[in-house]
Image (tube, rainbow, N blue to C red):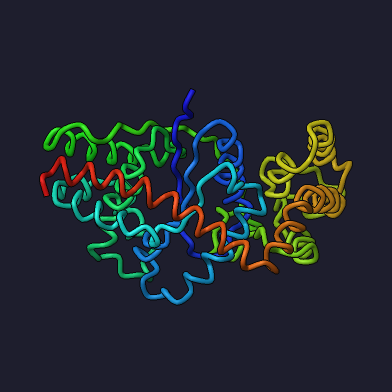
Length: 327
């Protein structure tokens, strides 16, 4: 039986952190065993908010690809490519923009939200307003059956489905309607307790060395009410305990939680356990990453091979689009 096709992408706007790994890459690694997967570096999407920092994007692309391969995204099981190296994405974006009503874009949940959050950037641009159309082109050009999304991203995929339906209504059936694969995203706070974000400088990155990880964990926020070693605490308000739920075995997690509530374990010892477990779990990623960082040719070969495969499929879809539109 032919596998269903999955497509997902990631914007190269900085180094990847543990939140990126647990929220997306870990799921991608599992999906590549059961689906025909297309994973792309969304560098054009990065320009929708980072257009003033375009020189940085190339370096971020390289580092992102290293991280993908290091965590187990396998070019023998998935097609890995860079968005801008497949120009047909842009062509389909233009054609879809001709049929997409403006109110559909203005009602997109993240449009006003990001404008309010990223006040230091001028996001009153055509590219930012229209990025959902580019996103639709990314998905539809590969006729993806499934798209992994968090619950907050479902409206974006529904917009893609609406654009595809409108095209099919106007010109005939070309695009299937992609369905969501709802992915569970573990709640992993930053080292200061806020959402993990590069802008907050509270991330633990996949590229961080063991020494850097040790230093960041040692300085992590804990229960603010636990001022002394003998004070009982609440593990659920401590970012450290959120990490234990991911990196520490279930029995030890229960023991640590009990020790925190009864003051049977101090924050320093709690962090030492977490550090050891994190380093142990991340060691294979760090080892593979170090080897990949020394082999630029391997990264280049992976991208070139994946891009060639992506271009063939995109070109075939665009031939159908042109025939349907009679252009």
